[in-house]
Amino acid sequence: MSNAALAKEPSTVLFQQVRVFDGISKQLSEPVDVLVRGQQIERISKTPIEPSEGTTVIAGNGRTLMPGLIDAHWHAMLASLPMQALLVADIGYINLVAGQQAEQTLMRGFTSVRDLSGPVFGLKRAIDDGIVKGPRIWPSGAMVSQTGGHGDFRFPYEVPAPQNAGLSRGESTNAGVIADGVDEVRKRVREQLMLGATQIKLAAGGGVSSMYDPIDVAQYSEDEFRAAVEAAANWGTYVTVHAYTSRAVQAAVRAGVKVVEHGQLIDEETARLMAKNNVWLSVQAFIDNEFANPQTGEARQKQQMVQAGTDTAIAMAKKHKIKLAWGTDILFNPRAPRNQGAMLVTMERWFSAPEVLRMATSTNAELLALSGERNPYKGQLGVVKEGALADLLLVEGNPLENLSLIANPQQNFVVIMKDGVIYKNQTH
Image 1 (tube, rainbow, N blue to C red):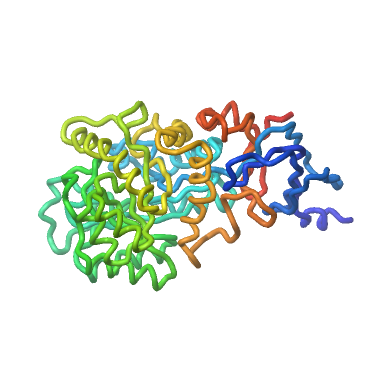
Image 2: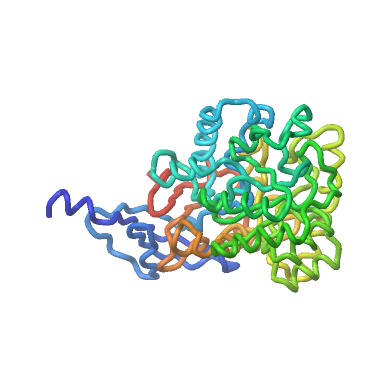
């Protein structure tokens, strides 16, 4: 066979004698062999698979093989730098820092992320083209916000803005765009879809880290939400909203929004409305612990309100069987991303280890699939099954019994594979 023909042959990797967490089950499988050919899991067998010539063989020795982790609320461009730096630093520097963080994200075992605001389109392309190592990215692009809302990063001296005012720093970098009124919201949403957004994010209410809006403020009318929903639906995808309060969530749900980010301050009526309309809640483990972003003054007060509501919101979501996803929402904190796995472990406060792992694999993959035809990666993720995409972790130990293994990926993730490519192998 010629060298050219050999180059076209898909690579094969054989995991021998691994116990599988398939992304769904509460127990590990009995020892099996798992054969990966190219980008997919080709075969799972209880009897030994004979490796063909050129196959990379990985001795599992009873370790756990599981799907790559998925963070459903990530900010690839905004996680690793303080807000002040993002507002003034050269965009080239911001991209290089984000590229470094993307590789570290993959090395923590997160093979997919849903990016919920930031100028991430270039980074996604660089990862997909093999220029930079990193996770699969479902980008929202810029968060769409009303004037004075959660995505308005202007300085006070830029207000009032004249009719012919240029773009603010946040808008010019495509971190967040300001849109007021139905027509402007529709236009800004279409722009993000044009750039490659797989889903659209709107700010529906006040935020902790934003500079101007109190946490109780509801943002956007139902007509404005509906314009965004219709524009996204025309492209076969959906709208998600940043919202904490019942008023903000209810307006968004009535307009057809499919996912709510946060929701820590919702009441029982709102939870019932979400369940009735099959609206997802993308929740974060916002509690007053060592992983909380340091805040002071008014931001600290807002943060404490959100933290106090997390237990109640999750309890209501479980009671009303709302579809629950999980994400970290790490922002503006260079030291925080390393805790990505540890923040997942924190979810044991409300769920069993198997439930947490299912949420961060197969359930989050269902959420990613809401992008429909805008889904940039065709194939099934979040599971270990024949025909699924080969995003896999080989774990030292059993995370279904000891979830804290996830918090130390450097030590416990022996193999990290994305799209059939091995990025880490410490079995030698």
